[in-house]
Amino acid sequence: MSKLDYCFSNDYMVLRPDRAGAYELLHLLFSPKVGRNKAVDCFTSTELHSFRRRLSIFLNLLLQLFLLSLVGPLVAVLGGALEFALNLASNVLHGRMEYPDRKSASYRSITGLIDPRVDLERSITPADSRYHAALCVMASKVAYENEAFIRDVVTRRWQMEFVQFFNCWNEFENAYTAQAFVFCDKAADAELVVVAFRGTPALDVTRWCADVDPSWYKIPRLGRAHAAYTHALGAQRNIGWPKWVEHVKGKPQRVHAYYAIRDAVKRLLEANGRARVLVAGHGSGGALAVLFATVLAYHKEKAALDRLAGVYTFGQPRVGDAMLAMFAERNLDRPRKRHFRITYGDDPLPRLPHESSAAHFLHFGIRLHFDSLYNLTVVKELPGDGSSSSSAAEFATSRINAAWELARSAYLGYWRSAYCREGWLLMAARAAAVALPGLPFHRVQDYVNAVTLAGSNIPKDM
Image (cartoon, rainbow, N blue to C red):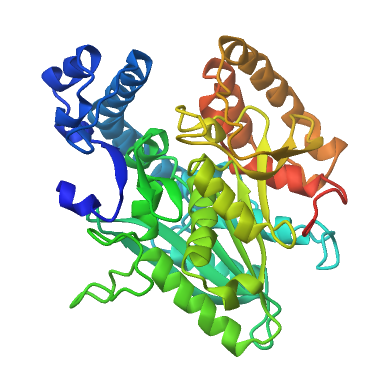
């Protein structure tokens, strides 16, 4: 990438681990002139006199280099083999003597293997205040699967109308880095149009790096936005967020997430006069969901925003600064609250990126937090009130929490709800969490459990 690619922004800082050698890393520690460092794309005149901030960038680049060069290949080989073997075992146990096909409706991701639930909880009806959240969390979970699997679940298990699966092009990485699907609650005269973005796949180390990367752009009228999520959602080289963009000429399959999904939603709303829109995602999918709604407001898509029923995110990381937060709240939460950020226990991803301050990254909106007993606390977070959530004490208590979750999993399905009963693979993952605290907490099944067991406490709007 060239610095010309960022000329749509009036300020930016993008980390480049691909250009980070020993000299560049040492230069970060000893020189404030980061604008002259090849490992950091920013204006040439940029200087950082805070050693703490330069150390933070140094450590982040080291982490990304470690993940990409050492962990990535190992996870790709061993993780891919494990996923394939588990699918093969599942086929045999279900009497299907067939070779696993990654594109088939029976093939599951690691996320789907750990928690095989795909059916909606029957006790949660459309009249229930939990219905929107329950539909969104299950859609966010199913979004980790392949297109054939998603289509089968939506049409056969949910008895709803599958509209389209999107595999979207990233101009900055020259890769497909955003996936989502759209469905309606009914084939005709639909009342709900749902957009669900895929989060970070368990075995995709490149996307792990995107989650920890503190790179950002400052976009006029919008504020600072997380660079990796801006790229994935469909920002364009040189021009950023124009209202309209052509798909890649000669390659119609290369669509850009925001533009393709926006156009699909607008067509569905025109065809279904009573329909309202839900946007959802788990993890980085939640970041894409809230940015999608925010860019709709940035482009003044009033017709779509007026029919936005809610944005439900589960374990969403931080996506922008105080200016972006105030812009989003002004457009998404007025005249009523429509952005609900749901968090669970010690899930580490909402703490990312770690560089949290009003000038960089913070959370905003209504936070619905569930503890490890699935008790709900509603928190209103003010833009500009960012603070770091990490501490040595929290790291230590995560081992205790992991042990408690392992014990809880043994009786949860009998104590609270049969729908929340956990299988052997999930219990094995919880056992691993005792030895590796923090890392395995970002699992979508706990969000499914939380919404299911919340009673009537989750609002549709406020």
